[in-house]
Image (cartoon, rainbow, N blue to C red):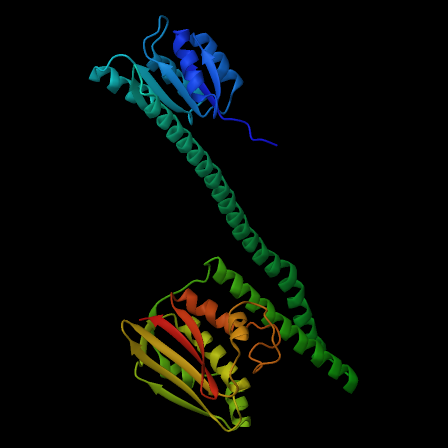
Length: 368
C-alpha cells in the first residue's frame, strides 16, 4: 500500500498562481488550492495535521500574515511560507514576528528555490513531529519510572506492616513458649521456629535496605569514624567463625580516621569481611587495608580462595542472583555483596570486585 502524499495548502487570490503552484508540487504533495481565506479555513478544519501552508501576502479580505497568524491557533506545528511581491523590511519583520513564518519568498518566485524551500519545510515538520513523539514517549517513560518509585515505597510499607507485624508475633510468642515447661522434642521444635523466624527477619531487613537504597531513602550522617574501632568491635560470631577456620585478620590502615556514617560503613565492612571469612580458604590471611587514593579513601578486603568467573562477577552486583558453581560467593538469597554495594552507594562511593592471584578482593572507593 502506497503512503499518502503530505498535504500542502496554497492560498492565493490569483487562480493562475494556484495552478502554477499545483503543477510544481503535485508529484510529491496533495495540493489544496484556496482562492479565499474562507476556503483556506475550511481546509484547516478538514486537515488537523497539515505540514505546510503557502500564502500570498496581498489579498482583498485579509493579508497573508493575518491568515497565517490565525492558523497558529489550530495548527501550531505547521510550517508557514509567505509569498509577497513587496520587499519592504517592515512587511518582512511583521511576517516573521506575527505569522511565525519559516521563509518568505518574493514574486515572481524561482521554481527551484521554492521547491527546495518547501521540501526543507516538510523535512523540518517531520523532524518536529518525530521529536514530539519521542518527547511524549520519554514523558511516559518518566511517569512509569515515577510509578515504579511509588511502587517501591508501597512495597516497603507492605513489607513493614504485612510481614514484619506477624513475624514479630511469631518471635515474641516463641520466646514466651521457651519459658514454659517443654519436652525435649517440643524444645527442639521451638528452637527451630525461633531460628527460622530470625533468618526470615534478616532477609526482610536486607530486602528493605536494598529497596531503601534504590529510592535513596537511607539516612546518612557524618562523624569522625575510627577504622580500628570498627575492626575491634567486629561481631563475636564472625570472630568465632574466623578462629574455627584458623584464619588471620591482617589489618593495615594508612587512613585511621574518616568523616562518614559509622553505622553504614561498619555494616558494609562487616558484610564484606563475613563474606571473606565464609568463602576464604582455611588457615589463610584476610587482609583489610585502608589507604588514600587521590581525594578518596580505598578500603579493600582480600581473601584467599577460588577466583570468580566473569559471568558470575557480572551477576553478583544484582539482588537475588544465585550461582552455586564458583566460590559460592552468592549462596542463599545472594544479598551479601549487594547489601555492601547499596551501603557504599549511600555513602556516595562505589564498590568493585576483582579476581587476584588465588583470591578475591572487594574494594570500597569512598569520599573522605
